[in-house]
Image 1 (cartoon, rainbow, N blue to C red):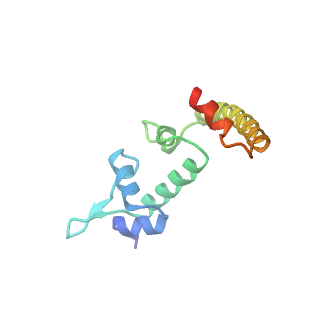
Image 2: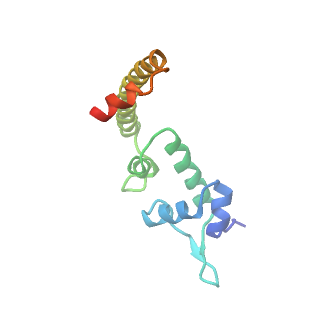
Image 3: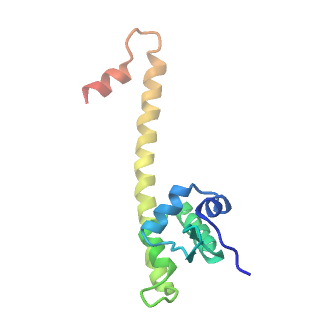
Length: 134
């Protein structure tokens, strides 16, 4: 017999907050399979697998829109490798852009640290003064 989870059970099994399950339901990533006699939404093992898949794909920076595409095409079929490849390429581009930005931030912070170390005895922090001027 298949398991049926209330939201509070599904969230614990998946290790996510109940609000996240409700959000996934609101955006149609997860749909309750049935209702209990008390009118509670009930989710099955497939819903648990789907939530675990969503969390795993989010962990590797796929967006919820990407995940909708990865779960199935409009016809209900698994997406093609070509379609998945395009999603991966797009996420890699995003990551490269973020890495470039982070390298710039690191450079600025290192420079600020050197500035602080050179002027640590002064009454006024030159880094804060410069940042206020910008």
